[in-house]
Length: 288
Image 1 (cartoon, one colour):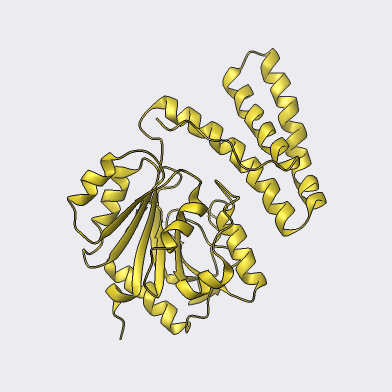
Image 2 (cartoon, helix red, strand yellow):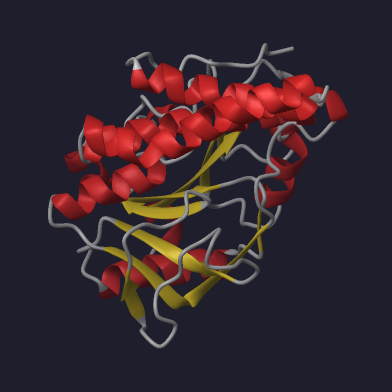
């Protein structure tokens, strides 16, 4: 017998994603415990969430990234399981969350992380397990929807907070597998994900700045992931082509007066360079 409301906490990480957070919360029952971490100074979310129900714990946090925010939320979880969801997840319901919980019971909690099958993605953006398997083993699940047994999550030490953006879930899953845990997705757990649209959707300026942030951290996190999980020389081999390409592109777009493209490759170059010399993932946008 599953007592869903006593066993699962929903964790939502937001960065100026108030409308999407509210839409997600409205899809699930008031009885489910919810923790929202707001990684910005947008205090208006507090007023709006207070109008919904009293089963939401809101935490304001300095933006130290997705990994750090999930670890912070975990410190407030008191249930056996917790379910991390991006604000732009759709087709979520108490029934689906209950199926996740039932799946955990069927696996006898012998899993490091449990993820859904995404209905609207391709293999390049989200790797999927064999659709013919009830529970398919996989190397990593998407950070957009991750179901954890709290005890197993704690045993592993949670996410590596050196990651600010990208690769944090891949790193966690690799760490869990290295410790003997299994990562699963299930064909009966189906979710719709809008993609990378949780933040900075209000103005074109914010979108441009967000793209710069993404370029820098995609490169930094790539190098750091390979260095951490293999060694420095593997990271160098994997990323040297992108490093040289970025440098060439910078000069090309400089002399052809293509400022936007030049900026893109400049921040790619800087992301790799800072990772190569051992600097942390420090690059941030100013929080307005």
